[in-house]
Image (cartoon, rainbow, N blue to C red; front, side, top):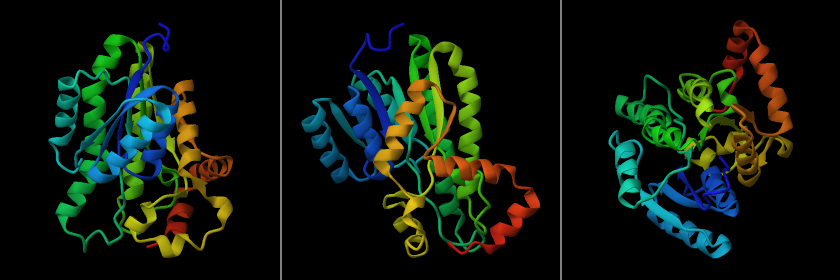
Length: 265
């Protein structure tokens, strides 16, 4: 099957209103994909819709949803069917991090985090993958992180969630690859976006040297190329690739020691 034969294809991107999600929307659109834009902030989505249409001539469909709601993935899937949209690519980018101690944080906050970062991600894959399998073509990007390999932050669920996404994405790729579907765990490091403002670590990470950082556009470009090439895992940037390999080789005891020295929180 020739992937170019059915253009324009359609990609659905969660967390599309800013940062890496917004950059991925531009990246897919410039490669002739129409774009379904999912996020909580409708005003940001409308602005991005206008940008996509003006700059690339592709269709863009804003959809306001909060993935902390367990019913949201099903609503997203049903809405696409009602609109007659065939989703050829799925990008699970929505995410954030908590910046408070585990025990001191209310359970509802942890519950919503787990729903957004893991459960909704898996649910969306489960909803959209069967039709991709039937058509013999699909592309899935799940946003993991080099945090999947790094020493943990005290009481924080972020690294655990990204480790889950990393492992799940590889398992999903193994199942779907024979059906013409590529699933990539995209693993960026420090990226210029509003993520650290939301996480509450802007003051700490801003002291890190510039060479450790990448732009959202650079991450999106590498992510698009990786999933199209069929890479199950892609760490963005050569520096991050080296760091992830080093961290993966560290003994558990050393990782735990390094984790105790971290002061990002």
